[in-house]
Image 1 (tube, rainbow, N blue to C red):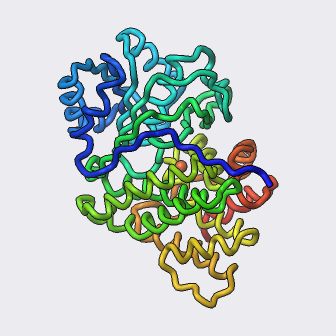
Image 2 (cartoon, protein in one colour; image 1 turned 90 degrees about the vertical axis):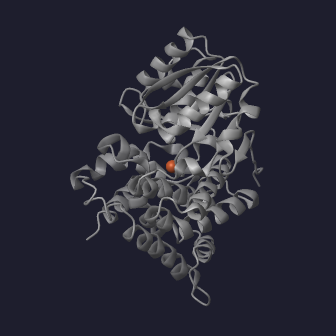
Image 3 (cartoon, rainbow, N blue to C red; image 1 turned 30 degrees about the vertical axis):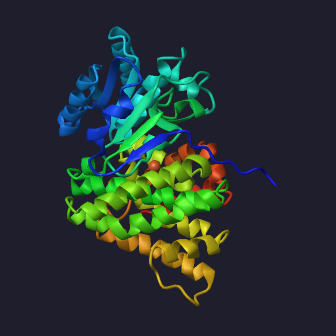
Length: 386
Ligand SMILES: [Fe+2]
């Protein structure tokens, strides 16, 4: 039997208003911080002002790199590295959704490592520990603040590259659910479906075991019960709190357990059609559950129970099917397209998308069911609806 592993080197501070108390945590990393944010509204949000005040109070200078686009590119990361170098930054703070946090991770790694970022694609290819990195999420979805993964667009085929390394872990995650209150419903829905996908995929993944499954199961329960409410009323503090917890706990689970086919296919959809990561996962998740359920029906039954479904006395494969149906029901009340057709994906691209996802051996190998190329084609076809 292969050894089970669990890794978690990140210090986490969690709670409403905790950003205001961040001074005690951020003062020990140096005198000059690189702040990495998106180029949109986040770059001017009140959290940036709060952080500036806190760091100024601790005598730390802030150099703000506000140029990260959705699905950040290698070129943007290199620009951030040069900006940090010009300003003598000692440490890095990423603030925002998955894109700025992932960009901050790779900038921090590039500050201590030479070489071509595209050559880091895969697992364990970053030789030295990153500059100290603090991650502050303003969405509840990616869990990037507590994982060893960053997704950057680049390489010869301009695809989404997953860079995975022990050297990418942030030293500190500051998770303040109040920072998510201003997220609009569509972003809340897409990010939340990413968190739910992390929870469900990590629960059935091949490297999952008791501690990761405990996290995945609770994250599934929290995300399923709270996502609709967080979308309907963004200022509902209870659902925002629970979605922030779900995102963080699912991240803690999948960083050790791995993910699966939904993510392999979602990366291909993002690379070819620019569909946001959370939305792509949302459109694929139920179809991947139906594909996988024959190899682990009991696990999906447990997920169905976590989602609050009454599956007592129902045979495991049917109960697993109910879990897929429940995901579709949730999707039907969220501001997200219901299938790939509605999302604007061309049916003629199915083979290309499947081939791209098939190359993602890391995610395919953590999926519970073995796959051949035709399986991916079929899952994509099923995701187009009727
Ligand atoms: Fe994800």
